Image 1 (cartoon, each protein chain N blue to C red):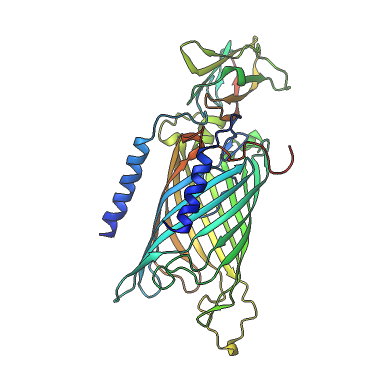
Image 2: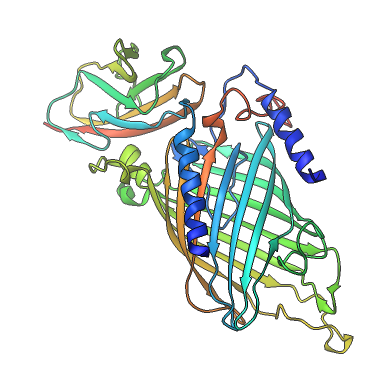
Length: 123
Length: 321
């Protein structure tokens, strides 16, 4: 009987979850191109990050640095016209080496998150 | 409606009416690191969140009795670095060969101050004080105390994303924990000594979310890319403050360290998380066998960003700018 009671409570919680109106939340990184930690043979011309939530581009940024800490992005970070979860920045021609992508984004409900990852260009 | 419920309703109503037009701060984040709300140990961050419910089937006690608990917790920020917590639970105890006993346990409240958050080193610290209020539950049937206990704590969280790249696969590790002490306000209850005690708890976590999105894309997809396997370890060690066997008091708590080892996993989504752990007791006088705990947890700041998910007094800090 108690097990049934506990099961009902869990079910009630699940129903509560399903009934919650659509809201926005912290933007987590969902995927990236180049991929997180990837080694690529061809230098990418752009870094594209896709998040779990729509972003406010005016309050979001991506920077890319080389191993010496020099900026190699073009400073033109922008969301895609048809998908404000997709955030991109152009890159200068990248010689072989390791690069650090740093992002700091604000989702449309004003929650802020940040993160970083590396990728390597090795033809 | 009881006085406590009235106070709770007033607090929620006040929170709901205070929509502050300022950028929200993220709960449980320190730089790249997201710390989930752990199930056994206090979290090292202030937040707007609710655990509803936490269901526990405790390991059998030494006499073979079995107990269960249903608990509700809520945490609410007053400022971006100061918050309050409240928890209530309902206990059910089935002694071996006797009639069951059940009732609400006592009310627990807490105040928390975020000491620091270091984003670069994924490090955070929090000072808190919890109060288990006496005579706020079913003392004779629900296991509630007949006295108030005050417990100051220091909570911390540290992620290891700042390790060198040569230790790539260790970066998803994090540890959270708390140390503190409990001070009962009565020496004894019905002739049994109320022990002061030293309390410690740790959670060792390996975040697959961190691995997939901050270290190395290994192709994890939902739901695995939001999972955090962990082991929590709690301990309580009585101070044994001047216990004198000739005093006529009994000491049912004993002198040794007791606690729980709890391996499990947390899945943290955008608005809620669910966690489950096995409960393995250790120490003198503890029960045997396995217990289990399941918790549903909601991030109120994500669910209700314009109302109860914001600090009541705005996003400013209690001290400093």
